Length: 459
Ligand code: SAH
Ligand code: SF4
Ligand code: F3S
Image (cartoon, rainbow, N blue to C red; front, side, top):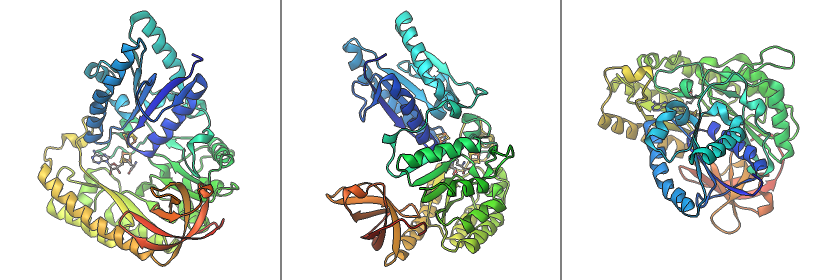
C-alpha cells in the first residue's frame, strides 16, 4: 500500500467525534491516505456517525444512499471504494448496518480506531479472497485506544485544538445512548494529557478544549499515582507555556467540585464560558431523567460560579417533551432559563432511543406539543443570546483568529464566549489572538475592528 490513496471523512455529532476523526486521519497518513474534500474517486470513505437522536441516524442512511453512485463509478473503473461506518451508530447497530446497506464494507466502534490499519489490511485480504471486504469490530477492548493513537499532526490546526481526556459515561440518563455507544467512563492518565497538550503548543495551538462526555467526573491517574480531579488537571494545563486559552466540555452538575471552582477563580486563561447542561427545569422530569440533581442545585452552582468569576457566561442543553412532561414541567424549564440567563444554549425535542429506559415510559408527549414547546423555548433562548451579544458592543474582546471570512481581507475568530467575530485583519494573523473593539452584533455573531495584536491572558 505505498501509492497515494484518497480518503474522504465525514463527521457527525459531537466534538469527541471530531477529535476521533482527526486521529483516524493522522493514523492513515503513513499508509499513504491523503484527505480529500469530496467523495469522488475516494479509495476509502469513513462516516464517523452519531446516534444521539433519531434524526442523526436517518441522515446517515440517506448519506450512504447518496454515496453509492460514487462507489459504482469507481467500480466501473475496476477499482474499489471501501465504505466504512465508524462512531456511535456503528457501535449501536453493528451488523444491522450492513444488512440494511450491503454496500457498507466496514463497521467499527469508537474503541477500535487504533486498529484501523490492521482492519484495512484485513478488508483488502477479504476483498482479494471473496470480492468483498467485510470487517466488523464493535468490541469494547480492555486496552486504551488513546495510547495507541498517534499524536496530532500539524495540518489539522488553526490556533485552537480539541484534546480528548476522557471517554464514555457512567451516568445513564434515561434518555441517552452514550453509555451504550461509548462504554464506561475512562479517564486518560495526566502525563499523557500533558504530553499531548505540550505537543499541540509546538504546532502553534493557543487554545485547548479538553473533551469528554463528563469531564467534571474526570479522575485520571496523576504522576503521583493518585487520582486527579478535573480542577487539578486544569491547574496543570494552565502551567504549560504557550497555552493562552483553556476550555472544557461537557460538564455535569452532579460532579462540580471545589478544585474546579478554584480553577475558575485562579486561572485567568480559563475562558469565562461554562457549558453546563441541565436538560429540564422541573424536578419531577429531572428525576425521571435520572439526572441526580434538582433545578435548585443547578441554580446554586451557577450562583457560586458567578460569585467566583463574575463575567462568566452560561450555556446549556435542554430537552423538551421528555415522556410525562406536563405544561407545568415545561413552564419550570422556561422559568429556569429566565432565572439563569444564557449566553447561548442548545435545545432538542426528545427523541426515543431504542434500548434506553425512557423509551419504555408509556406516556410519550405528542410531536405537535414537542414542536410548539421547542419553538417557545428557542425563542426565549434567542432573545437572551441576542441581548448578550448586543451587550458586548462598545467593549474590547480578545479574539482567536481561526479562518478566512467571505470577503477579501476579512478573518473570522472566536471570542472568549465562543461567539464568531468578523473583522478585517491580515491573513498572517491567522492562529493569533488579537484585541477587537466590538461594533456590531447579531444573534449569532459579532463584528468589530482590530485594536492590537497582543498576548494577554484574559478577556
Ligand atoms: N454528556 C453530555 C452531552 C450528551 S449528548 C451531557 O451530559 O450533557 C448532548 C445532548 O444531547 C444532551 O445534553 C441532551 O440535551 C441531548 N440528548 C441526548 N439524548 C437525547 C435524546 N434521546 N433526545 C433528545 N436529545 C438528547
Ligand atoms: Fe448522556 Fe447523561 Fe452521560 Fe451526558 S451524562 S452522556 S446525557 S448519560
Ligand atoms: Fe453522538 Fe456519539 Fe457524540 S452518539 S453526540 S457522536 S458520543
